[in-house]
Length: 302
Image (cartoon, rainbow, N blue to C red; front, side):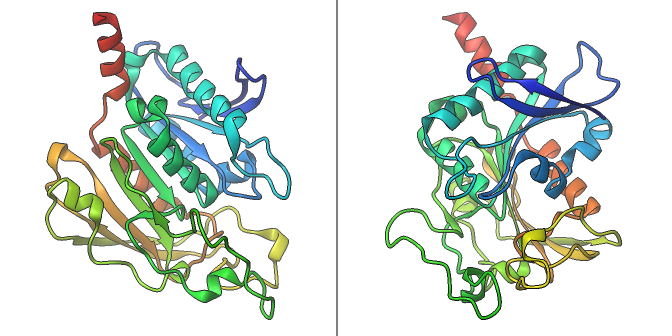
């Protein structure tokens, strides 16, 4: 894996870029834009979802930026960040060539997942280019119930205050564009996983099917060290080995991939274990792509 820091030209802001260490000039790649959650940074996100560990094996290019807004916590908000993210994607696609981008996925943790959802709802730039969205505890399309314990960040502390209106953690809004969708969450972050999916219904997929569990004997690489010793299972404890349930909705139109992955006995901030990380990447690789190439062809045709 080759890892370096790039500068996005339109804003002058830096971002991490990982690629295969033996990448050929004519080789196709899968491009992932990986967005951290509120209060985090790109360096933390690289360890929370360590896709870079599989960049060479699975021919991945991963861009991991950091949000600019720092108060009251670092988070993705406003046109300045949106411009930066468009710039990162455009710069990467120009560098590798749209013909080489086999598929482009947004991957966002927590508020980064909610930001992915917002971009897919409101921004034609991302609607026209994204082949898939991986929500890393960043909202599931359709209703999902979160436990009260999710909103208590430390034992004995009052629940966090949520706005009466506007987006809330848990539920995401169905985007107006076509794409594959994978939702993954810790078991303790939700009351239960719904048995149906509005996104699967949109594409006429069959009832969900359970695949073999993913068993990790190694822990993830990161956790919320600011709450060490005072965190809750819903918010997340220290990294540990684990097991994950995998549910897919088969036979979706256009070969779209629609899946849910539940990491058992895990919370919101425990970094993904190696095998579940690779399994999610393999799902991306099995999904259809080609939006970037098609967009380039349409532009060339006038």
